[in-house]
Length: 173
Image 1 (spheres, helix red, strand yellow):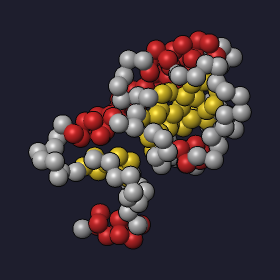
Image 2 (image 1 turned 45 degrees about the horizontal axis):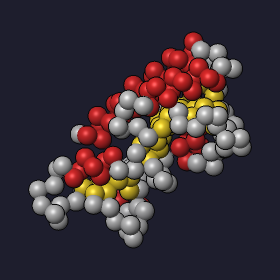
Image 3 (image 1 turned 180 degrees about the horizontal axis):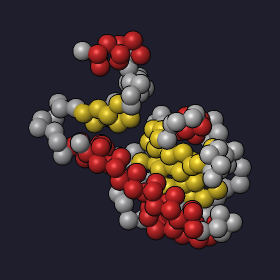
Image 4 (image 1 turned 120 degrees about the vertical axis):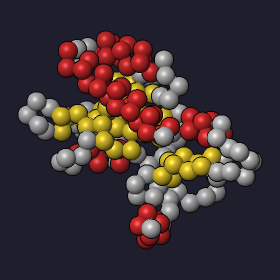
């Protein structure tokens, strides 16, 4: 339930950033950065908000201004997946934080890049701690392909995902 509410919040952020990009000239990176920084600064569930162009270049970032030159995320799954027709939202594999991204579509319907949100690494763990009835309780948040997005308590030596065959059997039962 908490994860669903968090993703609803991300959808609202994506919508607000899309709306701002529609009325703010993309050539005004100062205004865009100030706007996403103001959104980012008010939410515990968000570690950063960033905008990526169609070539994978990060053009604006809520916590890095100016954006370091050469910062490119074209190899990341949260950038590649929304390039597919019909895919609007992607939840990336955990790296240092968890990243959700939504496709940006140009007026002609072509891929225009993504808006990304980085989730604070400890956000779900902190919330899950409040649910534990005993010290041995554990909670896990999985992506739809079995990749672990969050675990509480953390398990630093655990695999990054449940093997695909095992995961498919688990969700089929």
